[in-house]
Length: 314
Image (cartoon, rainbow, N blue to C red; front, side):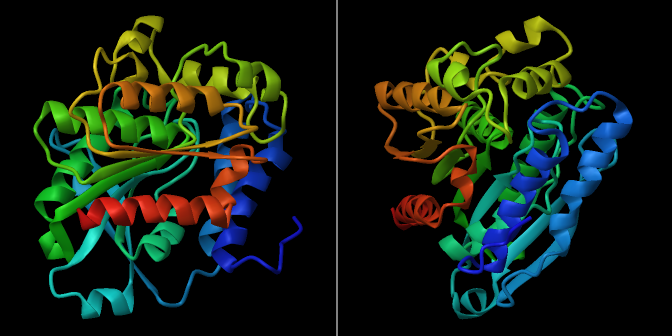
């Protein structure tokens, strides 16, 4: 994989994870459980790429309410910023990408976000499909969000300054957490919904136009959804497809990021329109000339960070 010397080590680690998916199966789903495990093991290599030396990390585990094991969470924060803070840093609870099937709480985007926003980022290792179908991942994300909100101060975070964020399938989960927070009266400062995977069987212009590109294909997206749900009726629930919510009124202020040439573009556009129609304070970012790899764009990351910092300042 040709690393770009003009990028930081963390930027390259994000590029590396996208490149592994493309090179290993060219955007096509693994055919066997063994292939799936191999892909997961290759993706875990990003954990060994050097991080910014000024970031601190700490791994914790959150007990599940029903006693079914623990939820792994990686905390990342800028060391000096935390030392100088009198009230604690903002807290971003982050949900990783991977189609509900791949990825982990150790992915590099959490490090990038902690550095860009100057916040503590708690990356949640929710259970993955197909071993754990919907709503297992949703349940893990919600339990982690509640626990982190309740224990924010002990982690060095400001309990009044909490936001959620997620990319791809994690963008779906972030949107779901935004709905659950509203429905359960958990106050959030904001939500960052990045290149979100929002619709089962989406028949959009971007799906047809860009669904053949390596890295994320229409076929892979269909397989992700089939892996995630137990049955078609699961997809009718707004906590599976948040875009089906009757109303988005009352959710936290949002920043929605889409790539102009991304297969998921139109799903993100549709959700942004729904947010806007519901009167939600919205920052909408549509990055020209970018595909699913928009997440490695320093320009896109800076815009997302600025939107989150604005939310935290209000």
